[in-house]
Amino acid sequence: MVQRLDPSASDPLASAPPAFGDEAARQVLHDRFGLTGSLTALAGERDQNFRLDTADGQRFLFKISNPADTLPILDMQTAALRHIQRVAPDLPVMRTLPGVSGEPWTEVSGPDGRSYPVRLFTFLPCVAFSTPQPTTRSCGTSRACLNSAPCLPTFPAPPAGRRWNGCLTGSKTGSSRCCPACGRR
Image 1: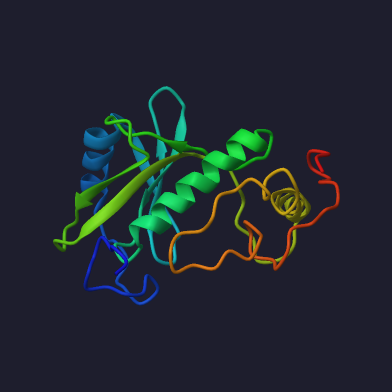
Image 2: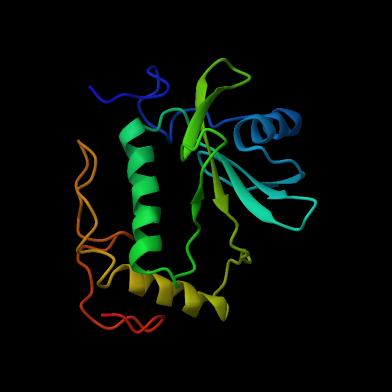
């Protein structure tokens, strides 16, 4: 059986997303990550996301994940980001940051009594848009690099119950073409 943070939830898209208030989110950030600052709510389909702006000008992404996510999925997401950081450090991909205990994520009790994984990442500024913009090309370029070596061949197997289709970003196969963003093959 797959271990879930919320054993009663089986599908993260059907499970109610987190609904922490700003003050509760600030308290978690302080207690689990040692950070304070102003929060800005960000959109999320199944998670609750905030941008944290600290007094010294740093920005972070604070993510309260859906409790229906399995522990192996959280571990795989962390491993994927760390792998990209190791093999393609020039790619503009967020970095996972440890909490005060040194772990990449921790669990907290939510206002509804469920257990939620919380994580902190570097913040990548972006612009939300519904029609293609000049930044669309750079997004595609980064995706192309994720689909090319050296990112893929050395990434470990997926968690149990998941099929790895040879691509970090969803295509059926990785590309053997040179990445236009970083020139890697």
